[in-house]
Length: 521
Ligand code: XMP
Image (cartoon, rainbow, N blue to C red; front, side):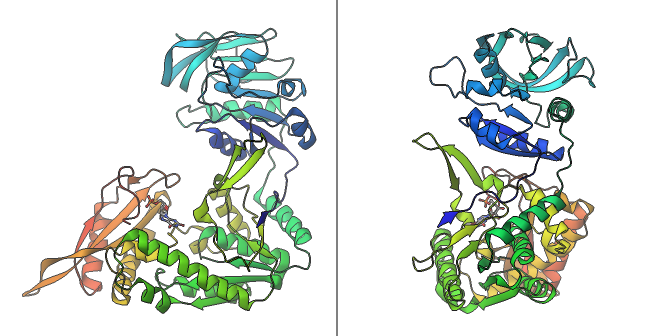
């Protein structure tokens, strides 16, 4: 498979050179929130390559290294001669200090966490801000003396140059991180750079992205047919809506009903994509096959492997029925595209494997189309709204590929899937009533492999236990259990016990990730 390059390019954009900070993506996000398109590029990107793509400005990100160490990540020094505004953040500022003739010193002690800076000269960056500012620091090295042409704008007790600028060359440095929430006025500082220094108008709109992306796809896919594995999740749904506008009936969607989906999920996909959009949709009803293969399997990893392999098999069979198709579309998102430096020195792109329909048999050889490669999740949701997808798809929670099977501890049987689906449906209905529902990353029911004693009427029962899990999270990597109101918990428990046969006890999962995971298997 080969991967296509980016689809649509906005005209006005900012380049962020990545020196490895955990916050690099956050810088890109913050700039896009100012409605200016922004891309993260490897720090080795040359000045010439940047000149060709003509960004309005360049940000040098933070990074874990010390500029004073041998082999520390560097940038092409010609970047400072492009005549473009450059903002160095943390490591980026230290690099700027070192490259342009200032004095950088390994810090006597690491400064990490909240700090207050004293603004001694407003310059361009602090023009609209008070003299004292709460910021988030995370550094070991610091600029002791700014390079010639620069002046210090701010300091802390331990850091003599917490910010600097060279107004003539439009070069700026911040020792702290304006992109994190712990720097409450950080967005304004980035605004000054993007708007005032770089002159960006901030007119990047989702509707423009949609139009440009559809036009680019139409051109690239002229006359060709495209296959898409539709999962019912947000990403593949948005890809479907976008590609349908670009290629119409040359888009063919395959939806594998593995029998492990949530209540009404199959019907919703058929209603939305088959009926409302009129997309050529092929639903492979393979529930019985998946259940057959899962019979007697208890081990979570084996379950996942069986489901993954069966999915590929079913998907491939459907794909073959559709004849010779050249392109395969995928809902790869920006955070999945990890740009790293290959041994040869050039940028290379790795994609997290679980987002791929990887492992297709060799007779199915496709070129990939990834129209969401440049977008973050919330941007994909905005794009979905732009393309008239209904709220129940755009606001959908993440759902694991192996579906309800990893929420049924122990053996997966048709009865247990039906029971969990019913219980989960009660959780979803109650969560939908909450004003704070958008703060919840995922909420769902889990069927435990234990039975417990209860009493209903005059009779003792010995039935299943359902666990309810609700978490808040930014990216699924870490998560905290969600403090659901007691009334909501009460309604969920009462409804599950009264309305779902075979359950006599409901418990609430109050563990965070780490050390627990979001899913139970
Ligand atoms: P864990 O359980 O590892 O889950 O904390 C983190 C996030 O990933 C989702 N998840 C999956 N998504 N295929 C997927 O597409 C999978 O096999 C899979 N397993 C877990 C999970 O729902 C949560 O959002």
